[in-house]
Image (cartoon, rainbow, N blue to C red; front, side, top):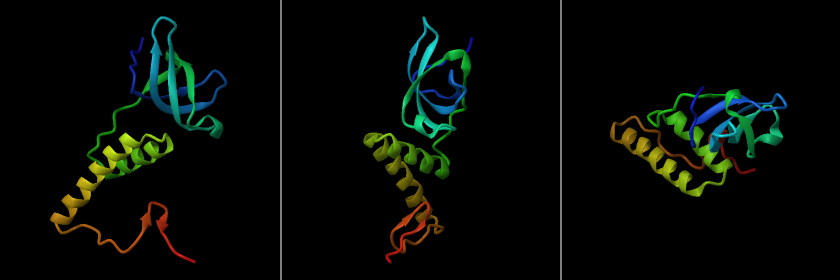
Length: 124
């Protein structure tokens, strides 16, 4: 049987057949139930909730290294969605490390105003 632990990233299905992707908050090894904080699902109402799922219905996902800027940006989105301010601050500091490294190498992007991942912010 697969051994999952708190903070592992997993995906699987719920008893209702909903696809979920999230991380483990608690594990009851005796009952074989894990409580998963859902960050993606085909049921939008499940996103952000904690759902109990049988361990056998879950599979572990590989750990995404923080060496990739895109992964860090995605994790920042998750930190915002879960209102985890400490994690957000940690990830933002890590992302700023990428940007300062790029500016030292001369290949950084010059800041031209407020920018978000959806595009430029424009006043209308």
